[in-house]
Amino acid sequence: MSSAPIVVHRPPRTGGRRVTVHRIGRNENLGTAFSDHDLVVFLESARISDPESVLDQPRWVEWRDGPVHDFGAA
Image (cartoon, rainbow, N blue to C red; front, side):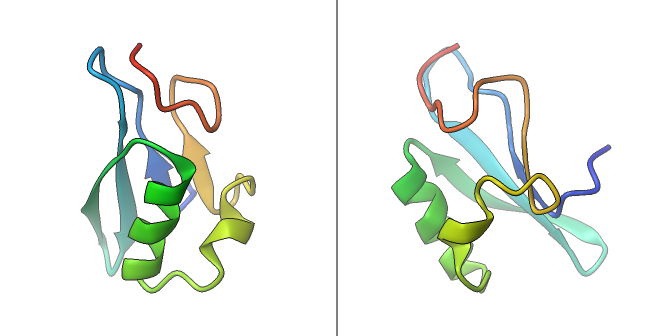
């Protein structure tokens, strides 16, 4: 289990990565990101302030089972 509140999950064979945010005691699915831009838009909608600045901060974002910033098919 991650201590980071934002998780970018493993890319499936079809591409993209599911994004979840943990808050108020539960995980909320934000959608499937196909780029950093998509990820930033999801985080903005979740009211994460300055989302671009947290993408490379492990205390905020955990990139699971795939290269960071890679949204291609596994």
